[in-house]
Image (tube, rainbow, N blue to C red; front, side, top):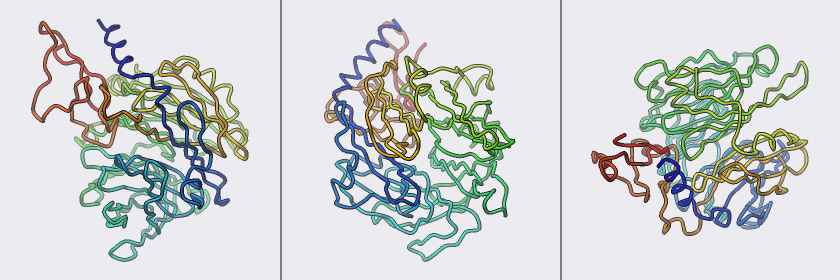
Length: 432
């Protein structure tokens, strides 16, 4: 029965290879003003300067993040240009929010975009606001202006939304350069409606830096250590437990520098451990089931492997620089930055992890956004149109993508047996 349902779900992920549409964010070189978008469709790179093709001007300097806001809007954080650029899914520019200096990561609820920033001031509709540390800005999508801000820790990075709260990982990453503060060890929780800081949770882990993936209530967070004496590590964070004041995270001794969320809610990660003492990179690969990992306090739920050929393929890269699962189809992508100074490569794997192709892209390709397949709205699919994270985590969908009304319990299967549904982007059984 389980094998049949797995096959059924696979069949629902229809001929995705011919339907894949992916935007790849190439960071370029810092202070070189050469960030670019690559556009991938139907197994080929259409353009490695897609934004310029569509708009006639450059994207900007060192883009850091890209998120889908709605069916018709995408946001891009462009770090050294100090703007958040908004585009349509066809690549054409809509607007740009300026004066969010040193912006880093994004999340959205569809009405607002939330941006973490290392900066110490921000221009808002209420005037300039100054900060001792870093902050989160709230952009109103009705006018693309910053309407509120909230100070958090020094140099905040990853940001995620769960039950009306923003969870922000603080790094203190300028500790060595600025000298007036130490590395941060906290995750800040902000009320997204009022933009007020509710509390800081001290993880005891310094420098919570880089990619942060979300699987419903769970976050996958990386720490690179201090690059000298403090080793890198990772942690799984339970937002629900954090809101209840319970023990809410488990630490493990592997970095998760580049991480992503699978269709069934696990995390895949490629960890990069770098030391200034030796000058060496050491890579690790992980698959993490956050539910099991949290419930067992790290005793199980973690494997040092990736599906199919991914582990071997990443091992053969010059410099792994990103990993991503298409939330609509399950196809897997990874990038190789090579020397950090020349063209990188985009890899594509099937949902089972079998290598399909390798494509030349631009400098430092690190961030991904899949667009829904062209006929997504008319297809029968087991996954909601806004998959995995940031939306209504309590909503339950049937295998046709239909949202069950609030308070309506899922039905048992035929004969009173268990039925399969989707909640928080994960397959769940009712009536088991």
